[in-house]
Image (cartoon, rainbow, N blue to C red; front, top):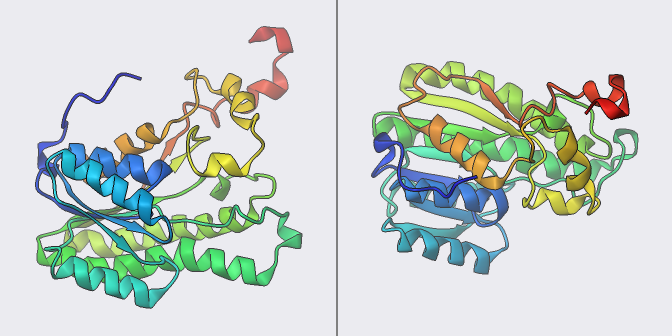
Length: 272
């Protein structure tokens, strides 16, 4: 993949964004890509203060305003504090990226999942984005509209072993994306989702066996696994005025992996 050479979407310049879970992995890539598009970025984090501050510094070095702000996406009161700051001292909100997530720290089959873990996963992965959009929408409307991008998951659409807590929560978020999109579009706010395939170099990658990336790669028609920067590019596009009629949609970003999933089963081994 070639290095990013500069801003592609003039419509994003000067916008103000909140990226929930914006300090590491995919969230960091999204935050930096928006900064390169001349978007001012509020970098949210739950625990990784050092990483969030470092990401904010990188954004400021790109010539935009950037601030790291702690808030647990699974706690409504903390989100309320974050968006009160965003709508006040931060100067408003045009873009919201819901990237904060959890659930992989205790992988189990669905039948063995623990209620406490399920509830906490739902709090962060579903109710966090839901609350964030409720808080951000009036701020966006006051500025003439905006865009929301929810980070989804292929586990919402296909069975993945030991992924039930995340998969079910992301399936609910996928449905919520459609409902919010229909209700908010008349108010000038577009809501969409991005479901990335196996993202090499992401935080989620570390929750699986080390060789998983190598096992997935040969089955990706595009020839490589998805990278955090690929996800960031899709998010930037969805936030820009280049995608005005994308409303309530999910962009599946996997290099053709799902489209070719039956090939590995049905073709003889020497056909690849």
